Length: 113
Image 1 (cartoon, rainbow, N blue to C red):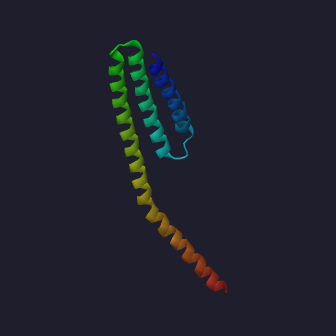
Image 2: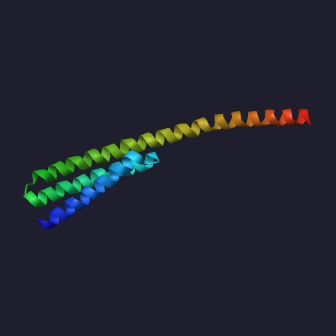
Image 3: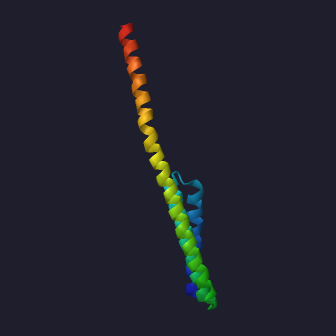
């Protein structure tokens, strides 16, 4: 019983810290990792519940949580990859516009000098 309480307390602390990072993460990658940690700690909680009660039902819940966590992490990672690719595609167009603007400024400086 003491082991189950220690595991549960550690998992709750991990969930609290991960939720804090999930809400305030400066980057999307931080949020993805925080979501993954939240699911992993939730699986640890189901393991602690199995130890405390002796019921195997909590193991099934833990397996379900781990599957949902895996799928959620993969989907979010794919969305991040897609948005990064989109940013790379848009970057050359923005660079060309910046180069044209810089050239126009240089020409106007040469004419004024």
